[in-house]
View 1 (tube, helix red, strand yellow):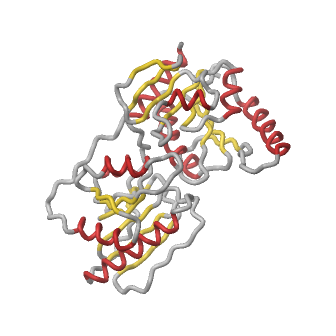
View 2 (tube, helix red, strand yellow; view 1 turned 90 degrees about the horizontal axis):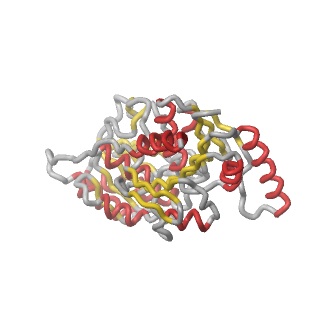
View 3 (cartoon, one colour; view 1 turned 135 degrees about the vertical axis):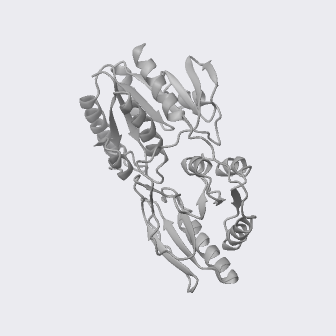
Length: 350
């Protein structure tokens, strides 16, 4: 089959991998390509964009060797059944071993999306470390204009990737009173999501009580959140909690202020939306949210906060005290998804 892209979407804790891949696959679909996603479990975000999902057994740390071997055999059998010569394989941050190996067998061109990591600034070193040095091209996010060849792998810098939503309907009800505050932890599956969400809710509630300020707080926990959130008694704040917002709705339409963590996709959307925001760095093994938010803080509409309720409330109050009429900068939608998609088309033609 020609003009088809295959990807594995790893999403156990966040939605970043699926979101970026959906962005690129969507552009390829506009260019006449078809897509198949391999997944460990079905993802709502992929379903909402109407892409095919094929479930394969996930690699689980701690599995006995015999069980992992059987899982690997199943993964290979399923991928082999789907894959044909001439497909293009696109990996995001993590290279799926069986998809990579069978891609080589079927002479598939393979691309790799690289998001900055704490431990390794060179995407080709990452690929060599996981024995995937036959990948044809590494796409480096946020480095438009970069062009290099390292260890036989073409390195191409592209603008950042932001998924195009399918609509802009507001998440707010017409009767929601007062300040409209959105709190989000992205996918919500990371270990610090529960403490962040509760610290944000507490900080907002205390700030509102101190100022006798009415607010409606909309908490989007993320689909992988398994903790709990609570609001201490407060006559000034109304709380509404949801796990997921579909792409027909906008998190930013009619939103007055946002309190969020600093994941890659969230930060790119904050740059684009221009809604005032308080951002708190989450602790991740490979993703340096502190460095990402330090760069984001240069924008007038975003302030970086510590993780305690007191710090979040203080930064939120300072943000609200910004003089009315201050221009809120926004940026054009990054074209990284289009740059990757068009390069994939060229890659398939070689």
